Length: 182
Length: 182
DNA sequence: GTCCATTAGTTGGAAGTCCTACTATTTTCA
DNA sequence: TGAAAATAGTAGGACTTCCAACTAATGGAC
Image (cartoon, rainbow over all chains, first blue to last red; front, side, top):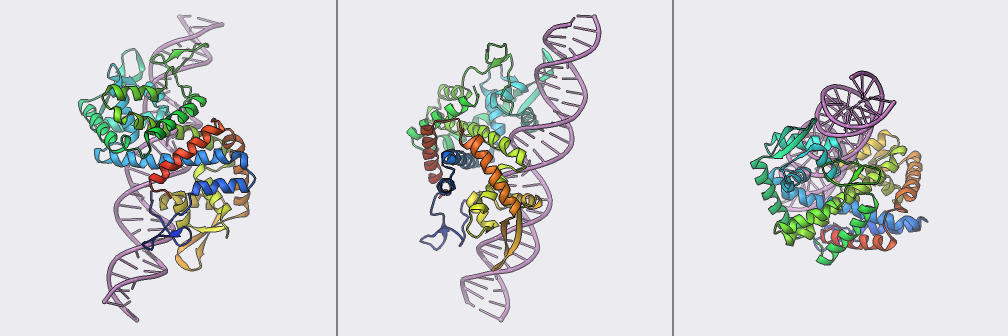
């Protein structure tokens, strides 16, 4: 992530002689958009760019938390979907539609989870094209440990007030609904 | 993206006989978090998951808009950074620190932009370890066309009200600042 | 002045995403 | 019922990100 990147070409001098960004780069970009005559697009640009950067920050925190457990966020999401499923197993297709990812991404994640002994593939009893993916005991235990870690290190310390947290979820829910997400 | 994923295993019947998600999967997950005794983490989980999904949606729109022009968003960001720079050129290091990405990501993007004839690498006159990256006329023209396209197709139609847009930027700015972004 | 630590950038590898194209089933309907 | 269309999943490729390890050049300390 290179958060501490610095250089003499931009930014201000800090107390210890290092340099740091003085202004918010996204706000600077927004200003440049307005100055270029693109005022109508400035807020949208700022929102999209903020979203990209916030995603990067949060994902990095999540991945750092999961790394010691040997899973990635993509695979963790699959584990939790299975964890919460009634029968304890789901077809690949359902996993993909719930997580809203491409079928090949599901294949990829399940391959790795299977290699790690966390899930099993078995043929669907009613559709021989499909597989049922199920948690192994190891997978179930890892899902639990990973959730404890994420809850403690990220979800309970998200870097936002409770109020901001709810506002964020509300706004993004509208964005997702508008995009046809549910 | 498989937005229209559907299946008999979940969701409701819609008018035309297809099926669709009836409930917001993120809200469902939030409920499951609370029911599992993880109330303190539920809002954080919902926020993080919403952010991931919103990012995916928005990035897909941006990439779809840029695709006809032959650039990706990662490369577009580099072009715009150069576009707005005073001298018209920047060292790799600065590009990385402004975009907050790993040096190897900059190398990757600049390699491809250079191959496409959109930027040039020249050695830094005062530091022979460094390169100065500059827009070519073609690169400048493409940056302009790409911005026009993004403004019209994404930034001016972000799928949120002006009010929500500003709220989103405000909340994400606090998140970014809290993470030490600027 | 010379040596060593730091810095700029690249290479190679792992992992995620998506897309296109493909196989193997299932379903539709004429 | 039998051919065509739709569906589930996989293979290979392009692209992004990051990390670890590396080269080359700069600059500070003695």
